[in-house]
Image (tube, rainbow over all chains, first blue to last red; front, side, top):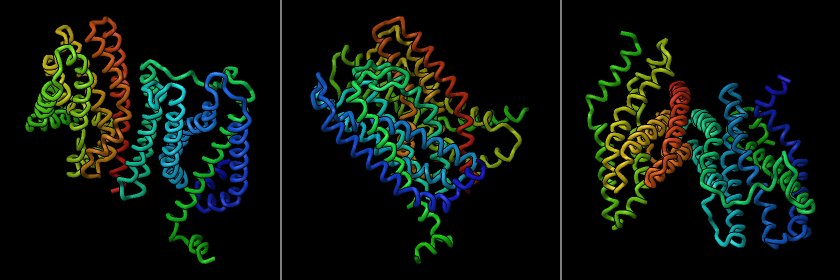
Length: 244
Length: 224
């Protein structure tokens, strides 16, 4: 167990193993996304109230899921890099910030597009939209802080601390923003309750969520591999790789 | 004299010898507050309605301006390094430092908060609410801002960056302050409940952030 944990921290090991696993991951991600998107956009039944416009849920909900999960992933990577000074955790922290920000932006954007036919307006100042916007600001803050430092190590540690402070803050932000009374429909998916969606609509959504998770993992790994090569460019194994 | 008291004395002396640092936030807020009635051209009642938003923005900006560069002088002249080398608790020292800086800026501003409310035609019964809300709110905002100041202590011209990284964390305080001032405008009794909530949040921030501040200063020091 511990040996595996330590191996995971070595950029070289990560580069080799991720290179072997990546084709499978890419296959899984593409299959899930294609199946989920075609099923959801073309074959799932129409919503009796919202008509076809509800279909944007198949992009909106998965990206919103990954936006929040990505923040926690980033914060955990930050904690690991602070506590065990693991090289890979720092790289993960660095590459997951812009990807998470992009996912948050996508969730906000699709939400706005969905809001126009449903509510009659692109933007509503309701609790969940505002929390997502603040999540985007949190991501951008971490990204900006990392960009401001010239020394890589200091940038990572500072960003890790900021991400951890943000983690403590997120529940408080959500609760406080919740006060602004909500116009947003209640959450579609809850783990503890029976879903309020028809199974024919639900299955493609679940497939899309799995697909977006796989896509996120793929994007993080791809960026991490580039970052590894950039950082380890002076080491022997990268030099050998380039000469091949 | 215990080392802690000596530290408090040093911090207080620094504040007393530079009174402009505590006067500037007050003048800044007076000037900005009186600008709003000039540019908005509203009736008394309308002015009262926008007053919470104006006052909160002013509190936020003055808190951010006080925290910018809060640790820079100590860091550059080696005081921070000495404090870390000393056996004393950095948690306590930095908590104290931020508290003193709050007293000299945020607290002084809260004393003037009723005047600002008066300029914007807030109702008379909101004098005490304004003072307590400003005192608690500025305490919270300054401790959060100090985290940002500690993280960016080795950087120069951090004003914009500081706002960028700390603003999202300030949202709960701003929401509570808005609730308090709006309720006070309408004369609702629920104000005291909101004030209690803000007090709880402020206590939490005050006790947790000094750890983060000293950790942030430490990593900046170690990578020198």
